[in-house]
Length: 132
Image (cartoon, rainbow, N blue to C red; front, side, top):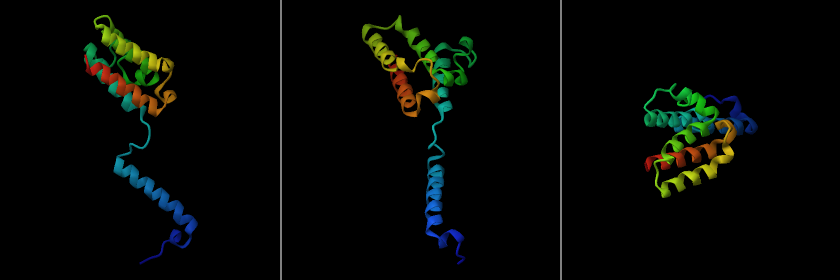
């Protein structure tokens, strides 16, 4: 068995082991270790297109994932506003609570909002929309 250079030096060995573990994690999880705002934007795009029965460039481009990635709150508020007038009081309260919880994120891109908040924002959004 051939001895590799990094096996001779513990300093290099630790670094390579860490890198190898990271690569294995990426392979195991399919690359999901990095925040991918496009995935979340696409989830919202699919919802917008389904609700408004339009293509991705419908509604002046609001249904496009690239637009949503830059300002997700516009598309989300557009959808929730569509249901607000038709909703009963309890559903209106859910929408008001959602907007109150995330209003601070208005005007921010998904990158600015950050992974954890984007995950919660999209999850909570889908919970509201699924109850319609």
